[in-house]
Image 1 (cartoon, rainbow, N blue to C red):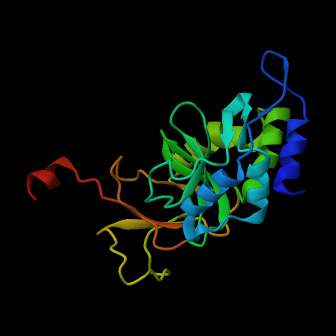
Image 2 (image 1 turned 135 degrees about the vertical axis):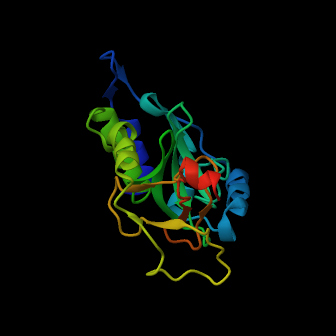
Image 3 (image 1 turned 180 degrees about the vertical axis):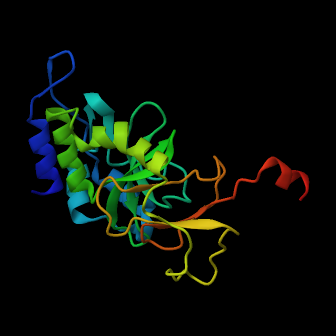
Length: 236
């Protein structure tokens, strides 16, 4: 199914909330030709995929009880460009955590990530918007076991506790652009070809951790300052 067809399917589906009451999503108004053109002009390379254009012409998003609202037109409002230079803020949980769709420098819409601030982790949610819409449908049908809920309630904390198997101790196997200024001590977070639920800690050195994303690939350089003991600080 196309993105538009999936959204139509979801809009016709009936879900039940925690109060055992039926509910449906409420579609938001589609974008006009002029609005789409303005949206396109903001995107990298001024490129808008045909399937996405068809989708937003039909609807710019929808209201959905578990996530309040899902939007396809929230470009460049997320911030944290060091993590995602270009992104669509698809949804939030109401507590400062968001689901972000990554857009590369050519304008291609790529994977969806859950970005959490407490704990400070990034988790791969879906390969693409189409899969994310499938997960939205799962969330409506089986909230507890749906991957969106599992990542939100479990995976993010597991990654924080385990320090993530995806993190590499050095960048010896990676080739970055010559002008890449890496921190003195860093870790490579590589989510390329990794399954949904994989992730990394973006706040290894606190809220002001230096993060570099050298290319369009889902590979990040994350500053990893060594914690110094009291006496090492005293005699340094």
